[in-house]
Image (cartoon, rainbow, N blue to C red; front, side, top):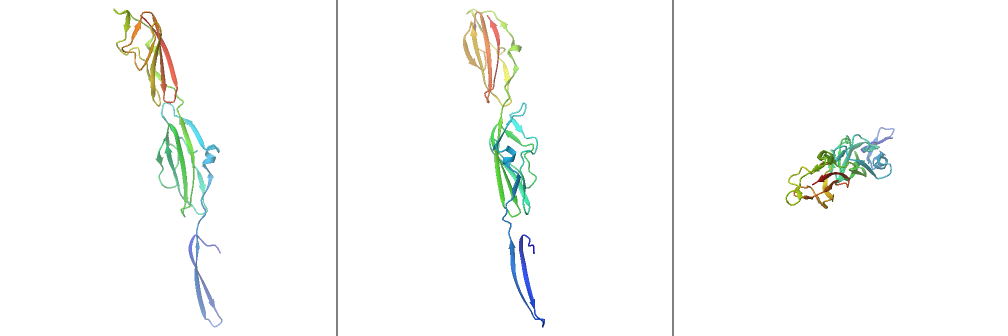
Length: 231
């Protein structure tokens, strides 16, 4: 005899030839203590590596996962009622309750985010697993106003036998998907000095000076360019 999950009352009845009867009963309680099982686990998703590394999306400081390839799959002897995820670390988020949760179209920040999946059945038996998502910035900064755009320049010396930069026309302009963290310049040749951000207020000696600009982002990617200033 097959008993369903829950409590079933069994009643026995005994009758003799004279029609006399007697009864007794007892309860049979069937509990589900069997946890769900992953058919696609976190280890399967990461190929036993425990983590996945991806690049930021082009022109953006984040990564958006495009599909359900990071979703666990589970089965249960009675039935699954909940499959949820939680993100901790450089990205923090929690999925809705229920079964229809996915990491498709979820946005991850640069850095390391831990994904924890939890599956629960009707008897509240749970299983969990987790993996890390490492989002790295592989995109270098880029010039909005480059050295080629600024070009080489010839200036007349002032009364102090030098040229004083009065504006920002000699400054490059750069951007980055995550953010520019430094904009440095170095002068070599007739003028030797270095600084950052702008050449405004700097003076050039008579002769030819090479101006070298170096831009760096938070991930350590650098770009450089140069032009010549002749006084």
